View 1 (spheres, rainbow over the protein chains, first blue to last red):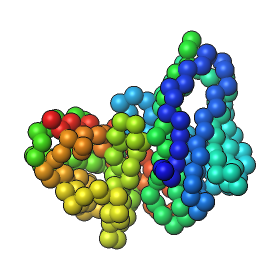
View 2 (cartoon, rainbow over the protein chains, first blue to last red):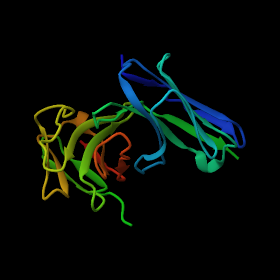
View 3 (tube, one colour):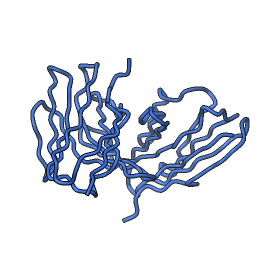
Length: 111
Length: 115
């Protein structure tokens, strides 16, 4: 079993819809949680970073962490075609620089 | 400013040959990471350099893989006697320093195909 599980999709939604992306993890020692966005043939870029249970909002993006359930989510409101990309969750232990990634969910926003 | 750059962008090689992949981190970044992205596998950590400290090599899959970082800047990942299962995108990232909020900035990757 992988340490981080993520549904690979693909996921297609109409423009303007709310998108929900999720990851579960098995190692309760993970302390830091991130969401990266990766466009085709590009490197991942950091979207959201959080380290506590609860919600963190940045514009149209909301990251949610539930440490008791070992479950994290990324919500995208008012989705745009430019949001079409692969979304990767990542997490890290305290004092360890190595990122452990999910497999990524491929998202397409249909105009 | 310039981001992380990697070369070559694509590399096709024959099984058994050695390859070298290069990473130029963002100027001033002391930490450098290599990851591998295989189809359906997500990104796997390979190795991490921080300043003059001994690198964390815990993610290297076999002794055919090695990496070095010269002068605290440019890094080279070397794969000896390549195998078909080495085919993947190799991504390099750099960050200002280690610590709780350090952001890793990724390069575009080198797509390696082993025939």
